[in-house]
Length: 191
Image (cartoon, rainbow, N blue to C red):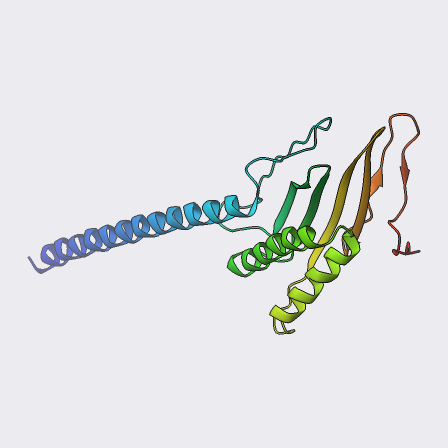
């Protein structure tokens, strides 16, 4: 009779343990879903819903974050600065998560604000560097790379001025010429 009582008690304890594990799993799944919704919402706030290209140009973008669980540091934008001038940028903040999102947000809005006050892409990147240096004092190992440009309407198309800050050099492809690349002014090629 003693052996039967122990077996029933062990089975009862096991069912209780399994119910506890199942409930813990459900709570973890709900928490993960909430974190994914938060990350997706935050990520959408860092990427423009639409691009505003100048008349005569077409612009499109598709962004897919590598992880549904975290916010990435990639960013881009194309926006009007004046009737005949548009700003554009593409960049990446190292890392993921809330820290990268904070730097990304500060970078995006600093670039847009600096572009309103200065037409020179190099000056815009200097402003960004000053703001990021002021906000982050070496205790955060993150870094940011950016290519910033100004598109100006011209009689025969558009003029584009570019400046890079740690970003790879731009690649210029023309319909009428073979593929060509060259670094922007002020950047020395390595090698």
